[in-house]
Image (cartoon, rainbow, N blue to C red):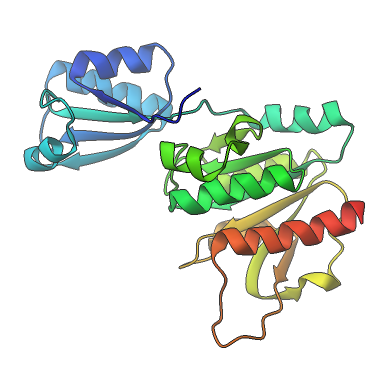
Length: 246
């Protein structure tokens, strides 16, 4: 599959994209537009929990590649999303305890691509991202993953905290990265595990952090106080690798 992110313009085209089962990551609609086709698109967007932004005609004109947007432009994922169950099944097929990355509000496509690449190389069985406040599987993400996106399933969920609760029932423990946590070398990170990484600005959200069983900090001796999100993911992932297979 190529790396081209799909841009869909025009009312009928967007309606057909939804009805064909395409995953729409983001939808731009002309603010104030309420006609029949637009209302149909809004209903489909609500069913799929698409992120919708209401914008001016000038903004739509800027985004349009064809000049014929008819008040609506959609961005579809360049790659298909998996289900959380697919990730658990991948672990079962390999006879391994599940190892999953959960990313809370990673909005930079380069960070997401780099984390997918790390997840693949660290032997993780998949990556979970939230439907809102997260970049989707765009062309930039695909390129930055260096091909890992073809091998490592990525699932998109509505509620990350609830997903963690559901996965706990499957026997997983969860560790999140936070500067105020226990040094990672002092934690037992073996067995079925979910590694939770937040964005650089806000870190892991409070509701998600409260669901985690452990909070891990990465020892740092420099003059600045934080790592890039993808680097932090890599450091913690390889401590998990060391404990699992070292």
